[in-house]
Length: 230
Image (tube, rainbow, N blue to C red; front, side, top):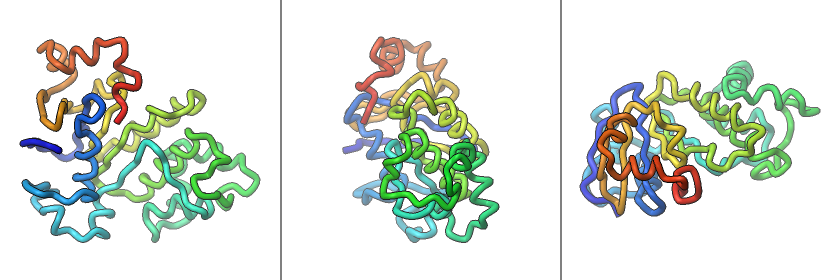
C-alpha cells in the first residue's frame, strides 16, 4: 500500500524509482499503467486523469518493458509489431535495429519470419529482452515505464540491452523501476520509496550528499544484488 506519494515528471525526464523489496516500486508501475485501480488520489497524463483514458488509448501513450519479457507464439516480426499493429515491415526492422536486435535476428534461418513458441525459450534471456525493447520502439509511445531489464540479463547481451534501453529513453518521459543503483545515476530525478512512502527525492548527487537512505543503499556492498529486486 502506498501512502501520500506525490511527484511530477516533466516531458523528457527520466524518473528512477528505487527502494528495498516490498517498498512499493512495482505498485507504482502498475498504477502508472492503470493495471491497479486507484482507491484515492489521481494520476494525470498531460492533465488528463488516466482512469478516464480508454485502455487502448493509454497503450498508445504509455509503453512498458518488463524485467521478464513476454513473447507470443508468432513470428519475430509479428511479436515486434504488437507494439503498434499498423507498423510497416520497414518500421518493424527499424525498431529492431534501434534495439540492437537486428543482428541476431538476421542470423536465424528465417530471420524476421522465425516462428517463436510462447516465451521463446530457444532464445537467450537477453535476446528476448531485445525483442521486447524493439516492440517498445515500434510502439512510438511518448511515455515509457521500464522495469529495469538488466537485473536478469545474461552477460553476453547486457551491453546491447543497456545501450538499447538508453536509446529508447531518449526523447521520452521515462519511469525506471531500478533494481541496480549503478544504472540510474544519470536520472533526472530519483524517488526513494520505503514501506509505501516517498522518503527522499533528488538527483543522484543530491541524495548522496544528504547521507540518507539512498546513500546507505548506494554504498552498501549488496546494492546491486537481490535486495534491490522487487
